[in-house]
Length: 156
Image 1 (cartoon, rainbow, N blue to C red):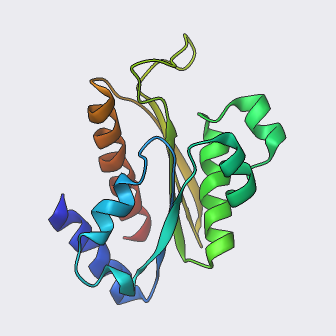
Image 2 (image 1 turned 60 degrees about the vertical axis):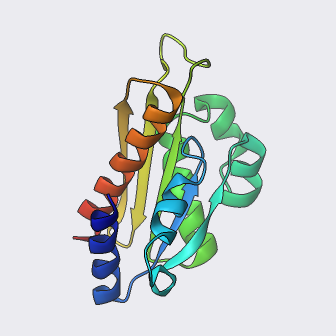
């Protein structure tokens, strides 16, 4: 995974772009992965870990009405998180994650392992839905991998 992040960093450096993150279910794992790379400060601005709905609302501008209507684990919220992070930071690209890592919290409509990953860039915003399986940690790790794949696709 480190070599993938290094390749992503190289793409950011080549383009003069920068990244910001807005994480919920991954709890800062993306930020941790990115900051393991020497020189990441030249393309990674930082990020938010907005675990509560209140933080999503106050820090990223996710409307309270959206959170109530769709829930924190939704494509709408993933989109609002990355767009809010991009807008607030001035970054070129923003990446977001929101989901249910488990072992509790799932429903019939949104079972444990449901994760939405969003990526906002000048070309637009894309959100992908995933259903992962495994332990809480395994779901979080799979979400990080999916987020990095979406990021690489977006900036390539």
